[in-house]
Amino acid sequence: MFGRLFGIFTDDIGIDLGTANTLVYVEGKGIMIREPSAVARNKKTKEILAIGTAAKKMVGRTPQTIESVRPLKDGVIADFDATAAMLSHYVRRVHASGGLLPKIPRPRVIVGIPSGVTEVERRAVADAAVAAGARIAYLIEEPMAAAIGAGLAVEDPRGNFVVDIGGGTTEIAVVSLGGIVLAKSVRIAGDEMDEALMNYFRLKYALLLGQPTAENLKIQIGSLVSQKEEKFTVVRGRDLETGLPKSLKVSGEEVREALSPVITEIMGHIKGILEEAPPELVSDIMEDGIVLAGGGSLIPGIDKVLVVVVFF
Image 1 (cartoon, helix red, strand yellow):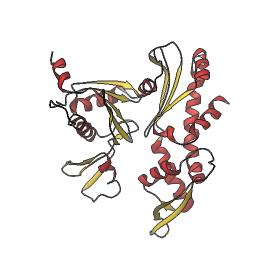
Image 2 (cartoon, one colour):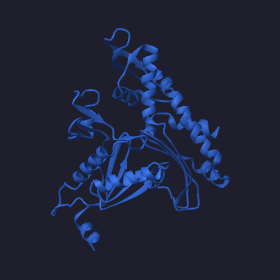
Image 3 (spheres, helix red, strand yellow):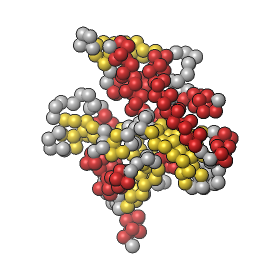
Image 4 (tube, rainbow, N blue to C red):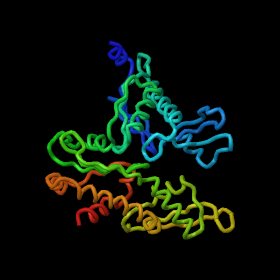
């Protein structure tokens, strides 16, 4: 009875709790929040000072009394209190938008989690959702959520191959008959691409870049195949030899070279799952192809590289 009563005054929501970004979907309204998974707080008192975009802008710029943290690492909760505070903030935000009747933030929540998490990690996500105000929390593996979101007929007796390249993990799964037949959660994804860029420029040019700068570089000119018009941009960091600020003009070719080892490793895991899949499902995948999801799939040329590595 109380569940039906709360249903009148609250909205059911879905949360993609990602390492890099958190998305909140409200039934009937679409995606209402798309912000970085970041929290800024006072180191001593643990008072929350900023969440989301505002907190991400503080990364690398905070005084000693303030810390800007990413509460999730490799797809799982690394800081429970910060995660609960972030979720609570977003739940209140989606329920504060308009309407004739006041919204009570006691929703039913479904949260996407990596397919390879442990039972303890699953419990931590559910507890964080409840602590944020959910009256009940459901968990769904991210590859299954991606397949449903892509409109695949997951209930059919046909193999669907899904690759979700996020910030902390790459989720690889074969889905059929409403379940995951074969899956692998690889903790190599967008964060490792950023680290690869930082290491590349540190070793080649003795230039120290911050993580936000490396991420922006990947988004702006990152690609995995040669482009008709090569892109260039200027990055700024600290010269490790002199300790002074330094600017450097960077080409898309250099970014491809830096990202190549990480992409090669991801492709190897994808190929490994395909080799383990049952023959009948492999036949379906050869006909229907592979569905890419997540921010990493937006890098230009990743689909072409995947086709060459997996199918040839």
